[in-house]
Image 1: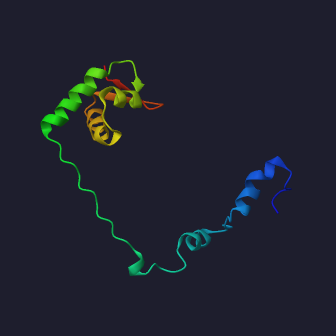
Image 2: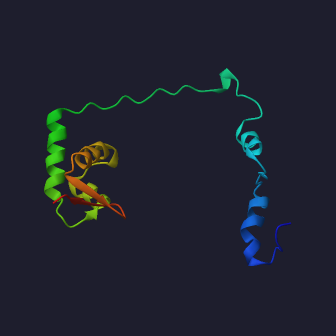
Image 3: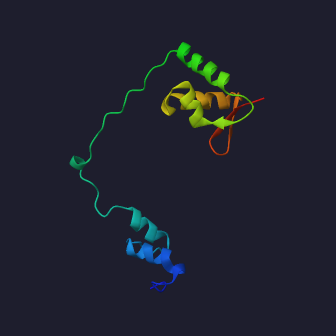
Length: 118
């Protein structure tokens, strides 16, 4: 046993053992742990259809670019707040934010904050 059950310092190790941790001594132990014991049968796999990407017109994308830039200033605001302000989902705005960041028009700050590049 790595530590006494009443010793607070051994809590983490004891919890790992309780939850079924695997002893790793070398790379082979890791490969054995992550390799399934039996390969799933072809009948067991389920092919789910991929969702079709929603096509957006260039006009819609340009309007979203403009709206985002009009809401941002040099003072950082939370990305969540921006999404609430312009009433769009994170899925819809993520590619636009990446475009603006790559173009050097916005800057990401720690803590999920966005600001317009000055």
